[in-house]
Each structure stands twice: as structure tokens, then as C-alpha cells.
Image (tube, rainbow, N blue to C red; front, side):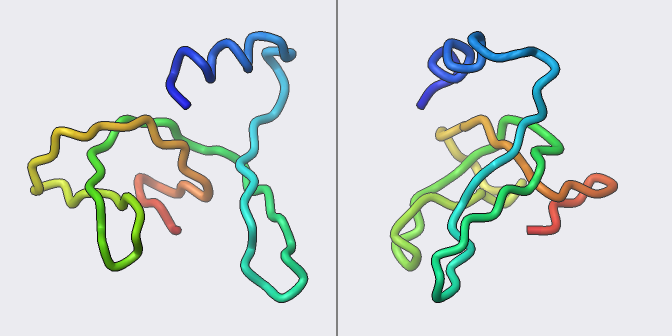
Length: 81
């Protein structure tokens, strides 16, 4: 999904509606959790073969792949995970 597609989808909702991020908790009952989105920013990512997915680049790593990230559990400038 890109920013334009996200804006199009969000455009149909009440602008005061709370935003949460849903993901699988990974337990044996496949529970879905929905923490609140606390911060949106643009960061670099790179492909990590070990996890077979993209991960955040360290701030000192050069990267050409910038993405919009929605952080959950953001506290005093530090992402808790």
C-alpha cells in the first residue's frame, strides 16, 4: 500500500476516529492485538534475508528504500517494539 491508497481508504472515515494497528500476537490461539498508533514517520528499510522481510535500517546505514512507518507504543522518542 502507498500513501495515496492509505489516504483514499481513510478519507471515508470520521477524521476523529481513533487509529490502531492490528497484527497477530503469535500465540497458540492466533489472537489479534490492536495497539494505538502513536507516531508516523519516514524511515529507511532494507531487506534482511535472516527474517525474509524488510527491517529498519540503522540511522547510520545508507538506504534508498524509504517507507512511511506507523509506530505503536511510542514513548519519549523511543520505539518500545
